[in-house]
Image 1 (spheres, rainbow, N blue to C red):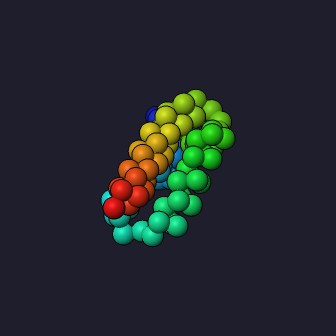
Image 2 (cartoon, rainbow, N blue to C red; image 1 turned 90 degrees about the vertical axis):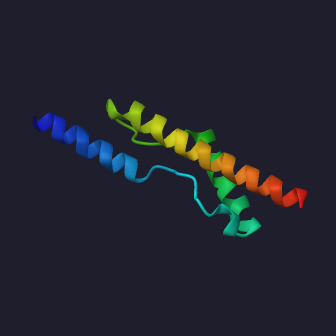
Length: 85
């Protein structure tokens, strides 16, 4: 039972930092979006996602990668929309 509690706590902590798309991306300036896009691209490139040790790493990494990728795609779409206008 203690192991299950530890696993749940670790999972909750790792999900708290999960990159999720900002629902109001359009309100941010182009400069802010470009900086965030560069930061997220670098995190993906350097594989700086999730917990770095133990068996929870695989789950944490996958969840974080999905969130970061979704946010990065949303930013790319917004930047493309701004260039077209």
